[in-house]
Length: 372
Image (cartoon, rainbow, N blue to C red; front, side, top):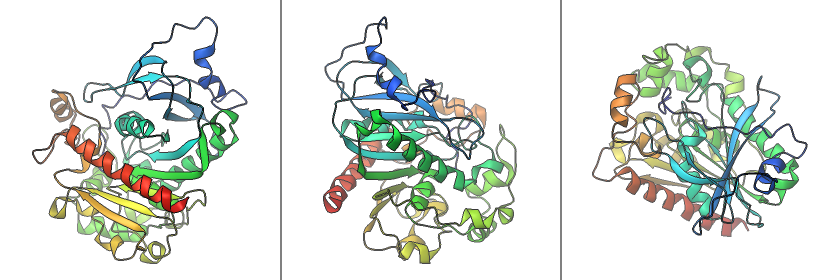
């Protein structure tokens, strides 16, 4: 998979809240604890963020997750995702929820990514009235990604399903979330997670064949030899084909958004043809600027009319990542990683983010009306 600055994106700080019987209740009550430091006040605050961990039976350690949510003013100021490459997103942590139930978005990060690098879009969505939950997919994060563990895609969908179970069982979260309106969203390999949870099934032999025919594709290079900092190899012909292509759909999902979804050439057309939820496949770039591995032509020919396809002209795959610092590109070059700070055209990453977010929000609003 195209990486998301594997060795440079710092993991976000975690509060261990899973030990409490009511998941997240302690986190959400932190501003009320006697003796706590005075909360910062900011009239314009419209969202807040909490972090926590949860148990998942398919994982050998706790899964880290972040939730952004509409909030009242207050909380503790923090820069989310700041590191030598990327600018942090200013946020207020642990503010009071606004007391209203909101639609839920579960957002799956890409290969070599993490929830912190998606803070820019999560904060924007929370400011529009959505609760956004972002699990950390072990084995394909900025902290632990390697070729051998990247394509355990059935573990990613399980991360989401267990997270939905935990949120539904939490009295605190049930007061914040409209469980009848759940969207799954993902970028790159996370786009596959979103598609799989919505009914699409990928065929491992089709993907292996694609890489045989396109060995220079960034994702195929990653599986062939890793990179300078993270050597490794994965024989795509030896993937567990049954688990890779199994039905991972979840009936709680009402719509999906897949941004530059990985393995676009490997989806079974028969599974695409019977997808039952509306969706948006959003490509970063147009025409020949779209990388072959995420080019949606094969998908578009098979999916129902309720699945829309759009493209963001002037963008590239890495435009979806956080805004880079002035020396971010140099740092990435020294690390030998992918060119995550480069843009192709005249539009800045901030301008591209506005375009991307606007398209996603417009889709969410029009499909919410259709579903409700």
